[in-house]
Length: 329
Length: 276
Image 1: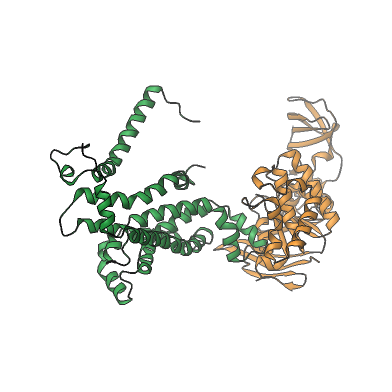
Image 2 (image 1 turned 90 degrees about the vertical axis):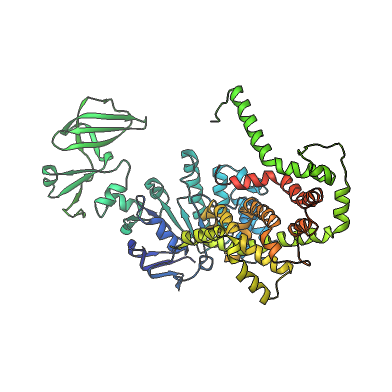
């Protein structure tokens, strides 16, 4: 079991309200991603759930029990840190066995669980090495191993992939997703990378300035953002926003069009290409459109448009409409 | 990148370093040479660095006249005991200051250090009377307590500096893994800070071994360590430089040997954090 419920959870550091009050339910077995820009409070929220920070007010329930004032060890949660936080003076075996040793488990059972975790994570050959003798990816696996041996109610991940290089990050992302599918344990994952959020999550919680902007499935957030912030944060490259006369045509204060929902070739808008990036699979153009401003365009395949060329553009997909307060209409 | 030195500059630097080292070492060298001289040649005018009549007689006489092993043992108990007791108190204190600092932690650290700047003689009378009332005069236990208190600010400061270097996330990880406060200190913090703790221990053993003021003030015979042993040779009969030098050489020899073998650890510990 691993249902976590936050009720009016507030955290302030002195005079500063980092989290003014959050209500959130995380169902058992869900993969939930907290996403948001730096300083939005997502790591603080995770640390409140972990028990590493005390709440200023509010209630944290874990599996129906009030865990607000329980110390971290008593909450039945395991955490994987951004810096891996392995014990450098212990071998991989001892690192993974540490939570079991602290729980007073007998030696034979410890060994059995460590061997099993090492097998799942491909660490069997490294059990007698120290963390300093491992690569970044292997260290991250040890940190995950240390978390899974405890068979926790939920896993908490605090930006676990941000210290890895790009290629390794994609691999580890898949491994964590596969782990979730096999363990079916609740996972809460903090990241600032919306690609990680979109690819891994069952449910995304978008945070901004300590507030929840929207909660929903990845495609729900992509297709139906509740406000300008979510619309701009989810999706890469970010959504184009247009105000003024063009927005008024759609009876809105602001309209938003995703870069992949603009076609190049024919259409009502005309502009000059500022920057063009050709990735082979996609082409990205920054076009200064007359009377509208700069729009980002993502076109599939190769497009023969370069700096200084005049092109015509047309909206070819959903146009998101927002009112003067930035809320979706 | 290391700065390249021209051979000429290297030579000058080396010479300068040797000169400074010899100036610092000269009194010790003089003392060792004197300990092998006869009393007349030790006080000869003009002073002679070397003499023709080398002798081991001073050592023999010092050994015969006093109970060196007892003084030596007292020094070992007092310096090691006060350091270990200091560490037991300082490790939790430095943990608290490094990982759960309060608003006044910095002030507290500075205040503790400031007590080291106070002249010892200023608290001599109250401390002496206190020790007398408690029956701690001329006891090893009393000296262990006194020297531990004298060196505690240094031990806490040094450990605080080492602990600050340990990432807080590792301690948080141990908390998530179910470690209690003591589990965290014993299984995670202490092993990780071991090089720093070892340097702190060595330096404080040396400081306690060399402490002369309190060890002489608070002891008479039973608990007297080697500092009192040296002092006893400047006693009523007048100053016998050769014997005094022999006694001094015998007193500093153990700590010199310890320092020599642990110099790598000491330098590493003292520059820990300064160069990463």
